[in-house]
Length: 134
Image (cartoon, rainbow, N blue to C red):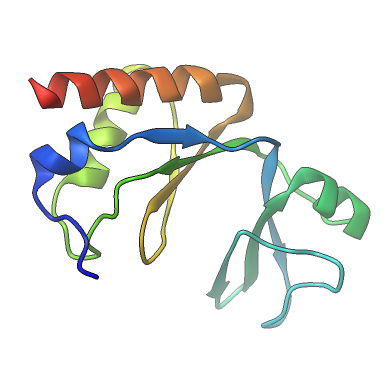
């Protein structure tokens, strides 16, 4: 199934969904996540394996982290080669003083924003979607 690539449709159809819980970014040496952890995303870098996982999983595994995030999924199926979506929502979030870490999955984009401002970020994205539908 091919994802959407039209920017107007991508923005108007984002349907941001805030997941329950707190999520953190950790790093471990080597190519595998520690036993007992279930990352929602991983990135293998030269310096180690980055894990994005629930805060309670990181705490239970004794993993260090410095950033606690809320996880927002944009529910539109975006094409991996779509142009402009990340720039558009990142600029809008930045205009409201909100940082954003983005992970692209095969079907959806996943945004990690400061936990204490996650609901605000959803509201900003919903407003952007509504404005884009006009």
